[in-house]
Amino acid sequence: MNSLLIQVLSALILLVNIFSVTYTQGQEQLSLETAILKGLKNNFQVRIFEEYYKSAQLGNAWGTVGRYPSISLGVTSVNRFDDAPLVQNPDERNELYTNRLSPYVNVNWLLFNGFSVKINKEKLDLLENYSAGNSALVVENTVQAIILGYYNALLQQERLKVLAEVKKLSGDRYAYETVRREIGSAVTFEVLQAKNSYLSDSTNYLLQELNVKNAFLRLNLLLGEPPEVSFILSDSFQVETQTYDLEDLKEKMMSSNKTLQNQYVNQEILKKGTGIAKSAMYPSLSLNAGSDYNKGWYNLPRNDDYDSYSYDYYANFSLSFNLFNGGNTRRDILQAGISERVGQLEILEMKQTLANLLVNQYELYDIRKQLLNVAQANMESAELNMQIATEKYRSGTINSFNFRDVQLIYLNAAHRKLNAIYDIIDTHTELLRLTGGIVTEN
Image (cartoon, rainbow, N blue to C red; front, side, top):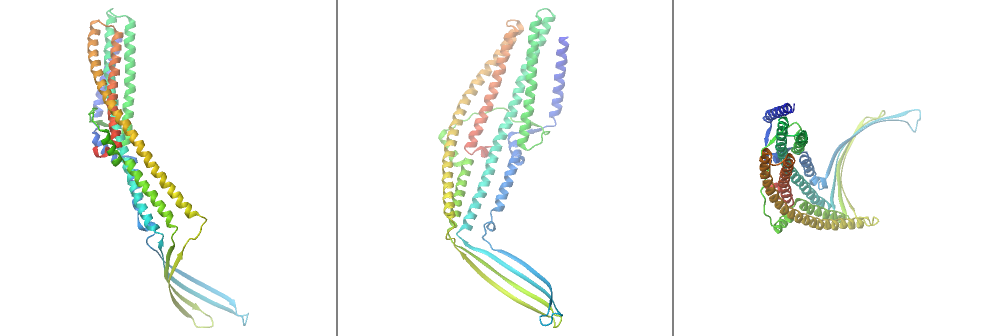
């Protein structure tokens, strides 16, 4: 009965593998480079911040800040009927029909307002740069997320391979113990232990399959692809360690870190805010000019009809100066100065925070390189130990319990090596992001 169960399980595994091969034939090969390009094109956050940047570009115009005059053109039509008694003879009525058409053109132009027009335009230039910086930050974060998402999917696949290998060994052990019991060389307890190990490894394998699916779903979301799209990752799960100089990394970070560069732009925006507040201390000069044309038609019952017209031209200047408004202008200037000083403190805080983070990631990268070397050596030892233990188990030198312990040691060693590779990739990617090189190097 147990032999039949093993045969059925083997057939099912073979059938699943056949379907998997058939399914993957329709999948798209995806390299890391292609994934990054696809993500930068389709990622929703990248596309959203591109629209924000386009909006900032549209708003950055001289017309927005009032450099140009506003010109209005219109026409007024008056149609009026008056019916009133005559003063000399109240029994008679005086009826008057009036039709008047008055087209006009008007120009309003703020000629001077304390240099606020120029300062506001400079502020819009900075806001456009700030929006571009935000877009660059989103691109950096997206590239980092795609790299980690890509290698996380590879990591989950490699874990699945390890679990498949361990499950196969457990299945062979279960089949071997079943045969031994049938010929009287093993007891039921040993068979049950082998069965429990096989079922436990099968459960872990199924759960890891779910982890693989979830990893690909997260990768699809980063790439802007629907869940039903599937890929075959063509890059291998390997890493080449780098040697970095901390001072060189600091120099690159201070000159190229996108977050810090954007904070510098924000500081310039705050300075423009102070200039705008100070512009209220200057007088304001505006022009109001235009022309009116009036054409009227009048119908009098006791007189001949007549019409009339007139032209009007005007150009009026208005000069105003705010002498006192309760100290609001002075308070606005002081508040803008406070915001500017806060911005300077935030830059200093950001520099120190980034420096601390860089040192932390630099040291972490060095430690993780050492852990990778240890994990690789541990994996080599575990593989050799597994080969020896398998031979000894077949020859009856060690029992099934010791063999299971060796299997678990091999499984843990494999997972530690895979995690060590992913950790190196994670820290390397973070160092690139901090120093502003994640986009250029990828």
